[in-house]
Image (cartoon, rainbow, N blue to C red; front, side):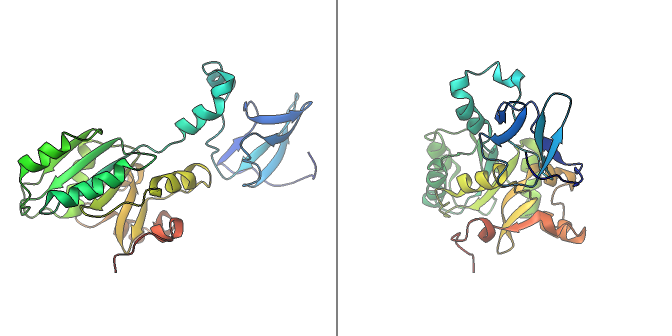
Length: 256
């Protein structure tokens, strides 16, 4: 290690000590097998046995210790970490009046490298899409699914989302209207931003409409309620938790 430093270690940090991907020359860490040191602020640290880096201001998603390593063949370490560093999300699709629009969106989700863990199709009281037609199609897809029938005509979309998340939740949830074709690399790019570039968010918007929401932030804020999660975050001055999809995926189709 070179350069002496007097930087403070923040409350949020990751020590490379005991990480199996830290590269050492004798007792001094010189690198990281996942190149995590090049991307972040690092601080030199040491104990009685070795010198190592501390990655400041972030939680490193690649750190693994010997307990983890003992359960995985060394030749599979990198592959297993990549498998573990995949977002767990469900998708909520608001159905329209025809099955073809549902098929378009579902087929684009099935084409994702990182597929949803679960799909919920929202069928509102005004929908002209026959339930039998929807059911017959869903029985042909390879992902877990359910149909969420909305009986109350006064329920807004945010209220419907709250109801769904109360029943079933994953780390994130995505929202699409039936007929929208999800870009085939969208979730892979979001995944890279989360695990490699430490993207942290409450909601990612496309022209004020949510594309993906953190379930943790959703629950922390008490859901959407009679307003929206976005409005709640703005009211509480949590502007850093609101992102636009174009910041992450510039080619994402705008709504207007």
